[in-house]
Image 1 (tube, rainbow, N blue to C red):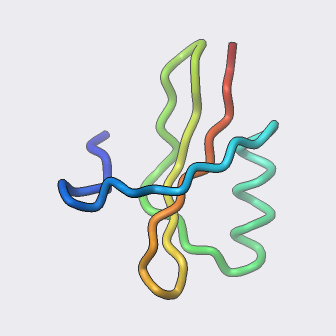
Image 2: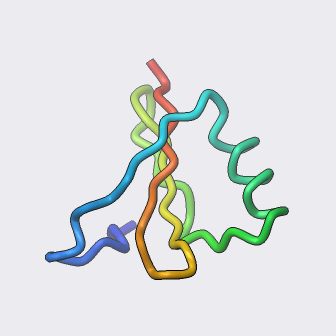
Length: 65
């Protein structure tokens, strides 16, 4: 899956969470719109992007190791 972050937009605030699926569900229930699907590097990391109302890009990350 290609990254939704285009060149020149690489300033992304990343937040590490213990359970990405639970965090995504919680935030989606609060109205957060995610960009694309969860990206997983097996055995290493799961991540997903989202934007705030001003268009700033954020990322949730769960370490898997």
